[in-house]
Image (cartoon, rainbow over all chains, first blue to last red; front, side):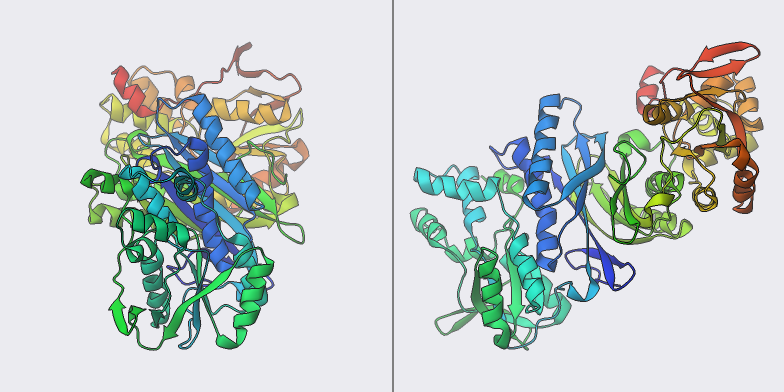
Amino acid sequence: MVVPFGDDVAATSLQRGLAAVLKTDTLVGKFDIPPGMTYFQAARKAVVMNISDFSAKGVQPKVLLVSLGLPPDFTEASVNDIANGLNSGCREYGAHLIGGDTSQTSDLIITCMVFGTAKTKDIVLRGGSIPGDILAVTGSFGKTASGLRLLLKNLKTPAALRKRLLESVYMPKARLREGLALADAHVVTASIDSSDGLAISLHEMRKMSGKGFTITKLPTDKDVNDFAKLHNLDTRELALYGGEEYELIVTVQGKDWEKAARAVKHSGGSLTEIGVVTADPSIVLKENDDLVEIPYRGWEHFKSEQKEL
Amino acid sequence: MVVPFGDDVAATSLQRGLAAVLKTDTLVGKFDIPPGMTYFQAARKAVVMNISDFSAKGVQPKVLLVSLGLPPDFTEASVNDIANGLNSGCREYGAHLIGGDTSQTSDLIITCMVFGTAKTKDIVLRGGSIPGDILAVTGSFGKTASGLRLLLKNLKTPAALRKRLLESVYMPKARLREGLALADAHVVTASIDSSDGLAISLHEMRKMSGKGFTITKLPTDKDVNDFAKLHNLDTRELALYGGEEYELIVTVQGKDWEKAARAVKHSGGSLTEIGVVTADPSIVLKENDDLVEIPYRGWEHFKSEQKEL
């Protein structure tokens, strides 16, 4: 197999060292559309979910097909909003919507399928981390988890901060330029997208390599720290066990670090060192001199979270 | 575009005259699984639906991805039946299941996505019919419509006939070998699969070419004629306005007819002349000296048909 089963994408060999890269991922209305998200945004998010996996593998998405499941009472205006959201998501990432089908279903369901090609040897897998490698991420973590909590628990938050946190929920971005730049520079030993949260994603990388991770610096930012302080929340909780955040988590050999950071910067993003790959398979957070184990735990679908309220 | 929007498949150019061919189609449990069909058969049918479109274009399917929507009460044994059905369908047609995702949904939903490559110039489109071309089909029509009526209206039918009619419902076949043989022989001016029924499929071909069709011989067989007689049904109704039947409908120039028929025969199938392509855009059935117009009308989902009972 070109890409091992269980990696972010599937792939099959074409001729001359090329691979066809394929991904499908599904957005289900009742679980994946938070309060206040429009159909346009939901459809765009369905595209971003799939593009994010291509980003982590360093592969340019070329075309997209969609399978839409529409409830019987769905209006034509809403279908148009969905079509616009799909096309907008594709345009942002240089892909084209070329086909699909619609069915009548009880739930709103948006299944996207993305296709692209890449040199087989250039596809960045989840399992290549080497002990001593730098663990790094694009962007920061915890904004989406903060935004979802804000929405679901109706937490009072200053308008400007509220706006930024909700933006991360309603208009998530895939790190395609960063992923392509890293693949192009040949500086990444392993890569995954963080859609299941930082904690689960590290566990998924370990599944493929057997190597552990020590996080020495939590990749939060001021907004998440402010939000946590305001509502007496744990920033570790927001940063590690969130999800629906489409950053890249990569490992890079020390000798390639400058080159990697420069490549991402040139693409318009930033790469932040957050820890190290270890031969010991433990996944831990280092706080002062303590090592705290990071369990396999991620965000819960907000609807089941809603039930707890 | 490599393939016009609205044809059986979507496609995008690769290098050196090759195209990536893609198709997605969805089976929804409450509409597309008739009484008595197992989950194995339903999953296999979801594969056949997609492969049939590749067959009509003369393209070998290479890999398949699946997006499964599973109701919360779905058992592991049933999921295994679905996995087995998907793999069995792939094996029959030389394709490989290489990935997918699962979601929780209210209905059972099986969305397949198929990928393959072909020389762009060899992909057989819907719109190339030329007036005077022979209109031909693989296999016969009306068996599935008979089988569904038998099931839904509980019509008493001799055991051997009943078995054959139900086989066409539960274990439909895609005409992949026939489609590949025809494409390989370069003898087809236009092609479509008949999954929406013979009548609708001819209308869909006309949409792309502007040309009409005169059917001079209904492609039914003894089983359909016997079943119609037994229950006082109209064979025209069964043959023209059924669906879920995965035959190929093609047009062939007279000079290529022998070559086309021979190619299909060598592939293990049969090609039957049923009419002619006309410059006049009417779609008609010739009975004795009468020309009866064939409306755009197809099978209804059997669940809505059930409601009428």
